[in-house]
Length: 142
Image (cartoon, rainbow, N blue to C red; front, top):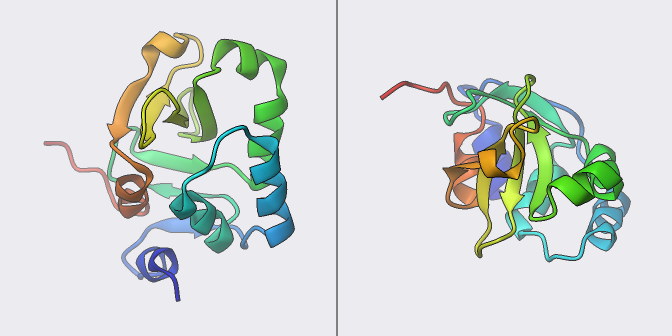
């Protein structure tokens, strides 16, 4: 059992998940990008291929896109031109997109307002591990 399945499978996690991505979908995703995606992100997709629930980070709600949607966004000319330094993999169900910030390594996780453009990117987690740890937990204001 992986770290992710142990973590996100806990009963206190408020998360509605879709079935796992297939290895064929994971391989297609890897081929569709010019970067090496973090292993933890690929493991997340192996555990759940999309879903929605609480997240203990802004934006408080997180929707993980299905693998095919992530691939489609990578090919979309608008996103390629407007957000070339970001790898979008979800959102909050409103306007904000959730993405890897490709401008630094390890990739941090940012929230972006697509209307505000790339300048609106705000870091919400320093890396994918911290981000995954917050999935399914309620956000608590400081």
